[in-house]
Figure 1 (tube, helix red, strand yellow):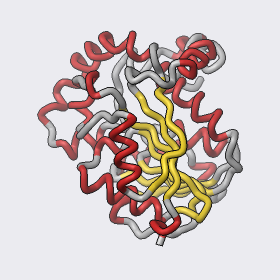
Figure 2 (spheres, rainbow, N blue to C red):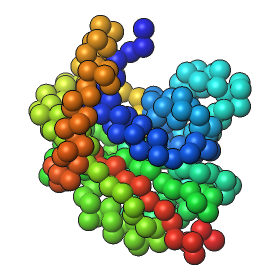
Figure 3 (cartoon, rainbow, N blue to C red):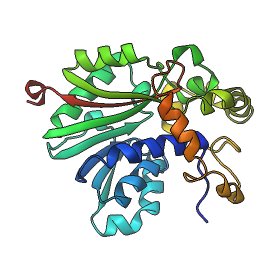
Length: 261
């Protein structure tokens, strides 16, 4: 039985699935695949791709989970820093989930420049980042975040990097907000020890976490934690997508032609 996903993760994937249905499948480059949920979604709807992660353990997890797809040539992985890697301009989609907040100011601009050069002329970026700075908490600290974004700060980054922001949506509201106090207690109880690690070590471990009833659930919870049961909450999150209190910000952007050179 497939392990149930957290409700916030399911809601993000449900929104992403709807947005991807508007795009013809092609070649993706994913930065920071974590446990591979977005990778799985992309592969399941016909995409092929390349996944980067600086953490060797994360790459090993992805290699094991998608061994069949890798053998068929549908997926390749790279254990390395995307900012330092050689890239080809052949991607239809650059996608990252909870990655950019781990970069300092210089790195996040370098990320945008590299991504622009990695895209085909009609390619785009999809990103998910933590939102609402007033909700900064222990999870941001233990994950090594530099920031939580607002629509205005994201728009400023996109514009200054020579990109055009084409779509934004706040996600997981109000579910994640209601669960946030409990989440903070669980994270503090399980992961407070990570605060003694360096920021880079916390970043490396942020994609693979084991917090019971936060990131890990008993198998029978899958009867409730699935996209069919949660569909009403998905409808609510879409109706509240303009809320500045949403804890996740989804965006789509395209680089200006001159910035692809």
